[in-house]
Image (cartoon, rainbow, N blue to C red; front, side, top):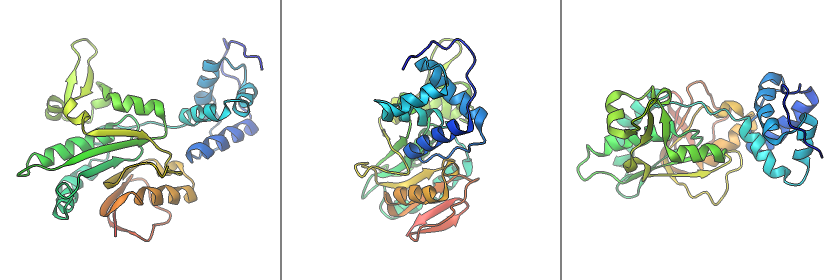
Length: 284
C-alpha cells in the first residue's frame, strides 16, 4: 500500500467506512459511537490519517486489516475516546465520601485492617483520582494515628495514562480546585503561563495501569473500597454496561461503594449492589 503525504483537508467518510471503524473500536473498548456522528469520526480519525500519511479512509482501513492492524486498532480506539475531566467534578460525591462514606468504611476496618483504596476506573487525565487523593489526605490527617490509604487509576488509553501519571496540569485544568488546596497540593512553574503538578506526597500513593472495562484482565491487581465509574457508561451499549459494572464490582470489597455519573443510570443492577443515594451504590 502506498501512503501519500496528506496536504489537503481530511477526506469524507462514507457510512460503510464509519460502520467498520465503529465496530473495530467497539471490539477494543466497548465504546459505541453512533454512525450518525460522521463529522466527529472524520475529525478524530482524520488526525490519525495525517499522522500515518494515509491518503483516504480506504487506505486507513487497509492498515487496520494488515499486519500490525491490532496495534493500530488500539490507536483508533484511543482516538474515539473522549477525555473530559476536572477537579471536584460532581462535587456532591466527594462531600458524601468525606462525610459519610469514609467514616463508615473506617468503622468497618478499612484504613486500619487493610489499606483503603479508591479506584478511578476511567481516570482520563487523572483529575478524579487526584481529587480523591486530596479528600483522603484531608480525612486521614484528622484521625489519631492516621490511616493507610492509596489511589488507583485505570484507562483504556495508554497515552492518557502517561499524562495522568505525570500529574501535570494547566491553569484551565485546575479551575475546580480551591486556592487553599492549590497551595497545599500543587507545585507550579515560575514561567508564564504557569504549569502545575501534584505534590510528590500524593503521587507516591498512586498507581496507574491500563484496563479495558468491558474485558477486565484477570491479572488486574486492584481491590478497592470505593470505585468511581463515572461518565463512561454512557458510551456503552446496555450489555457492555452490565459487563463493565460486574467486572468493576468483582474488584470492590463487600461493603464498599460504587459511584456512577449523575447523568447516568444503570440499565440493570447486579444482585450484589444496592442503591443508597443518587448514583451511589453499596456492595452487599
